[in-house]
Length: 159
Image (cartoon, rainbow, N blue to C red; front, side, top):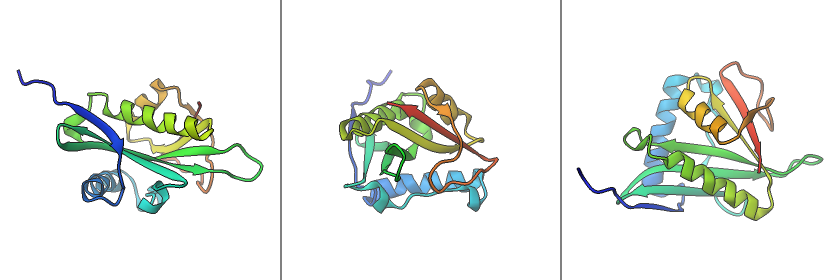
């Protein structure tokens, strides 16, 4: 039995080559699951400070997961952070990587004073839906610029 690899959770620039490679794998998966009009890929700039942040999780020396959040402050509504680009390599799934990334993204929102997290995911991702629901996310109508889409599920969580 091999020893458990050390994990490292740290901020990551979404334009860094390892991050771009994970994002490309995520986009390929989403493009295989959904038509283009149902995919909502956030550009890297939207996940950089001051209104965003992006994190990576490494097992040993390999970046195995990433996720970001983009903060929104719509007029007349509560501010919220939108979880974007959460992705974990198949080889690292089932190890709590996504849960650790989500905890970090939520903690970052609370530190900013943003007490609401939202996200959009697809109906063909039962593992993701299960994770979000276990973390306390509940369904809601479309938000922001999203339109109703039978392939999308919209979720939120009060932090």
